[in-house]
Length: 317
Image (tube, rainbow, N blue to C red; front, side):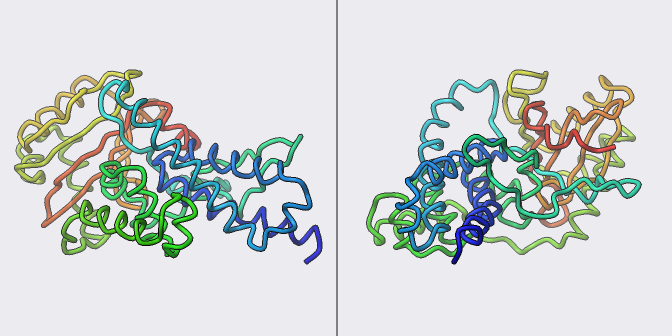
C-alpha cells in the first residue's frame, strides 16, 4: 500500500471512531475531542513506527478506547459538581432539518487534522449512526455502568470487538473483560417487547397535542402512573434539579411550563433516532425531549435544556 492510500485508509477510520467514542462518552463534543487526540498521537509517532503497525484502525480504536476510559473516570468527579442531573447530549436527524433543498448533513467521513493543519468543520454529530445503541434510554443505562463495564459492553455487544481486543484497551485479561461485559449486561435488565417507530411516534404526537392544548387530563392519560421526567439544564437555564415522578405531577409541570413560555413552538423530531419533541422560541431550540414508551404510555421523559448540549440543533432553518 502506497503512502497516500495508507493515509486515506487511516483517515477513513474517523467515522467509526466517533461512533465508538460517542457511545462510550454520551457526548458528541467529547467524542470528537477523544478522536482528535487519538489521531494526534498517531501522527505524533515516528513514520517508521507507523509503518510497523499492521492495523492502524485497531491501533486507533485501542487508543481512542483508552482515552475514553480515562475521560469516563474523570467524568464521575465532574458530574458530582454538575448542577442538577447530567444527561447525554442529544443528536438530531439532520435530514429532518433539510428545508428548501439545503444540504445540512455530512456526505462522508471527515478527515482529521494533520499536524499543523486545521480541524474539519464537520459537526461530529453528523457522523454518528442513529440506531438503538444511541437511543436516550440506552445511553442513560450506560451511565449506570462503571467505566470498565461500559467500555467492555459497548465494544463487545455493540461493535462486536473480541475480548482479546478489548483486553488491550482495558489492560485486563480477556476473561476479565468478558466478566465486565456480563456484569454490564445485567444492568441493562430485561428486554421489553419492542415498540415500533410508528407506535412510538403516535404516542409522542398525542403528547405534543395535549401539551399544546394544556390538557392535563389528556397528558395524565398518556403518561404511565409511575412515569419519571428528568431535565438537564446544567445550571445555565432554569429547570427542575431533581426528577419529577408520577404521571399526574409531570402533566401539571408540563402545563405550567406552557403557561410560562408563550410563543413556544413544539416540533415532532427524531432524537437520537427515536421520535421525540423539540421546543423552540423565535427559531431558537430551547429544549430537546426524548421519550421512552411502553404499552402505549410514556414511561420516561428526558428533557435536555443545557445550551452547550444543543449546539448540534442550532443549524436548522
